[in-house]
Length: 266
Image 1 (cartoon, rainbow, N blue to C red):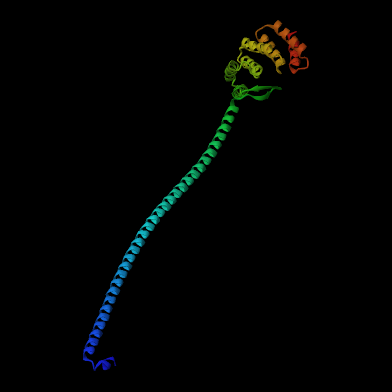
Image 2: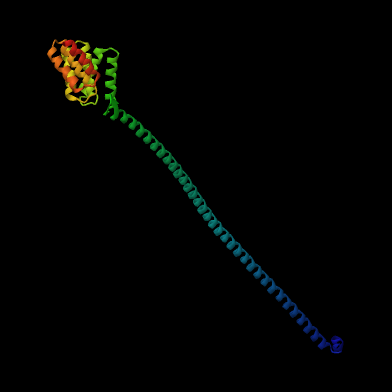
């Protein structure tokens, strides 16, 4: 419309056309300029985004690496702790086992000690004096002492007078203060009398009468002394001994036998 208005004026038309073209060109240049800026802005933004992505990836990588290292350290710590716990557990189990073994060993040692003490006590009892009663008299005698006398007396009762003689002599030499001493002298004198050792027999009986005047067989020992005197042809001595026997032990069987012998001596 504008061109139509200006059509009657050619110069103006050309000016107008030129102005329009310039404006269009300027507008186009402006458009091109705006697109370039936008592209640069987009490129800058992409670079920033890429850089941010790279930085973020790096930070993530670094953080992952740090966390992985921390996890590895933690795992090593946990593993060390587990190993320590297992070692302590094994040590505790070993200590418990040692304690149990020590308890068993202690119990065994106490049992052995008890058994040893019991055995020792039994062995000591074999040697310790014990109370014995023989021919109405009680006294203490060692086991071997009692055994020696009983063996000697058993030999006499079996008729082994020589064996009994030797055994009784040995007994009196080993146990001169024994409670069996009076009996040992009595049976020794009898063994000697049987062997016709009248002087030896009389010495044994007189020793008995001197050392143990309260011995139960003293009346029999007096009668035996008188018998030895008779065998030795000492009638006066025998009479005196028999009279003493009757006077000192009137109710004894030996006194009755003494009366018979006195009657025969008259």
